[in-house]
Image 1 (cartoon, rainbow, N blue to C red):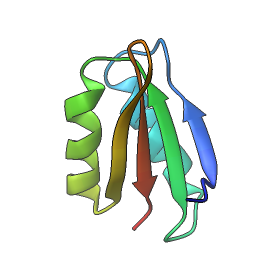
Image 2 (cartoon, one colour; image 1 turned 90 degrees about the vertical axis):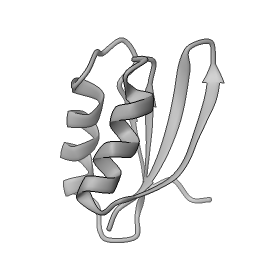
Image 3 (tube, rainbow, N blue to C red; image 1 turned 180 degrees about the horizontal axis):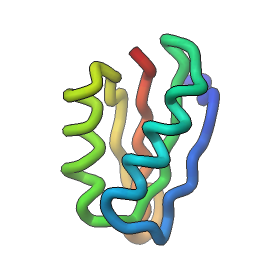
Length: 76
């Protein structure tokens, strides 16, 4: 899968990972994919909730290394 933009939010706490993703998604065209890296435990709940509320599609959420997870989000 083609990743159009990667956002590193490792070390940031709620709500900053979602806010960074939202800001970067604004600059993408519909259908493009953003990869968000985050280690905030709340992101497991916040990112899917944000996607559901904003209409974006959460394609995948997977552990990368240690506490870091990658979230693939397709812009609506």
